[in-house]
Amino acid sequence: MHYTGTLQETHAQAREDIDREFGAVIDGETRSAASGETFEPTDPAVNEPITTVPSCDATDVEAAVEAADAAADEWGGMDASDREDLLREWVAAMRDHLDEFALLGALEVGKPLEFARADVENGLDFLEYYASVAVAETGEYVPTGDDSHTYVRREPYGVTGQILPWNYPILLMGWKVGAALAAGNTAVVKPPSPAPLSVILAGQLAAETLPDGVVNVVPGSGSEVGDPLIDHPRVGKISFTGSVPVGQAIMRTAADTVTPVTLELGGKNPFIVFPDADVEEAAATVATGGMYNAGQSCDSATRILVHEDVKEEFREAYLEELDGWEPGDPLAEGTTMGPLAYGGHFDDVDDYVDLGREEGATLLRGGPLEDEDYADGAFYRPTVFDDVDPEMRIAQEEVFGPVQFLFEFGDYEEAIEIANGVDYGLTAGIATGNPSVAHRAAADVEAGSVWVNRYFGTVPGTPFGGFKQSGFGRECAAQAIEEHQRAKSVNMAIDEPPY
Image 1: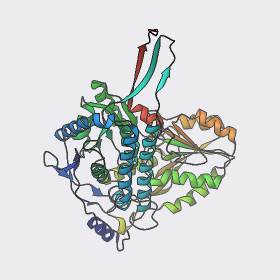
Image 2 (image 1 turned 45 degrees about the vertical axis):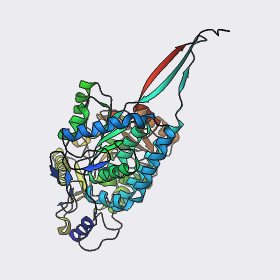
Image 3 (image 1 turned 90 degrees about the vertical axis):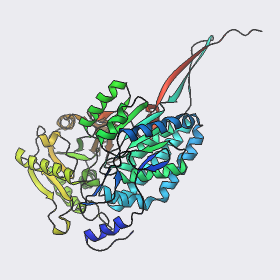
Image 4 (image 1 turned 30 degrees about the vertical axis):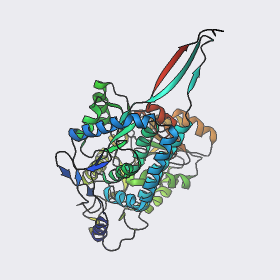
């Protein structure tokens, strides 16, 4: 894909290249909403509607759950190896459409094409990983004596619900739907309202490769689709990624039906630069950790804690690294950062930047992109605050944008205190040349993932999930398969041989 012209012209060309009807995917068919209502996701680079999507409600959720329930026995009763073969066919079909997925990601989320493509490939890698892990599963034998035989079998829930975030639609679909299907469940997926297109495409390709009803995609709002899905008595498991308030509401709703949930709810993640770190390497690492996807990542490196002995040297190298992360057209080759995902989120990020000024932190650089050519889009420059007090709201609350905050510490204990001094505990980065410091800090930091001298270290096989208000449950590893299954113990009496 290669587009030329102004920002408005390139995105108009790209929208014309979308040759697909987007609908709900239920029981192997692409459908309109039962109500006939629609909505239009918007391209955040130019603030123009991309296409029309059905706006579903509880009636459509009921149809999707019914289809998933009807398919559950067949899918769950297959040998894991047979499910693996079908899942790999689905993945192969999606890989054949990588260019289309990348274009949709660039238009509906604002990701640069190169990064949009990489995110899709990463999600498909996780889906294939789960398929392989499920095949390798074995039962558990429990020794109980000569008069009985006891074992543990793991069974799928049946119908599961996955509620996806807008920042990584296909990547998180791979994490969630991949685990559910590999474990023998069927799925009803609610795609994110600002970015439903790539998930709908994945559902349409599933309809061509998997049995009808195994994957169902129901676009619509949280109140009209999400709530009925969570509250449905035939949905046995819910997985959600998003904000803390929404996660708390999901827990309350799921409590009524005692439905188990996996929640990944965001972070305020520290990156600690100890005095023996390679300063230039740490600067490059944390710039990527904070600016990738315009900082719209639950695991983004937002709080940069730097030892006082290297603070000045680090700051100089770090600000220089940020020069490579200026926003631009996500359809243009070489762009590293596109717009924020939608206009309302742009306003939220800008409000936090205003708050940082009011709280007395020093704004070193950043703010809205002031360029006439980009005036219609939600473009925000890499933004950095220094002289941040750990008790400021900007130091405590998740901004979810290309905004990072510099802190200074004097010794190890102070670094750990600042790192742990928030309600979140999702990820953390550590820069040090001392293995002892690395291991000690990895143990002391309250986070579900700790990455040393690197950032974004989640790969298939490493469990991902949070501590504290960052949620609970694990994805990306064998534990995700287990969380989509129920354990059943079987104890059989064994009599003496009759002869």
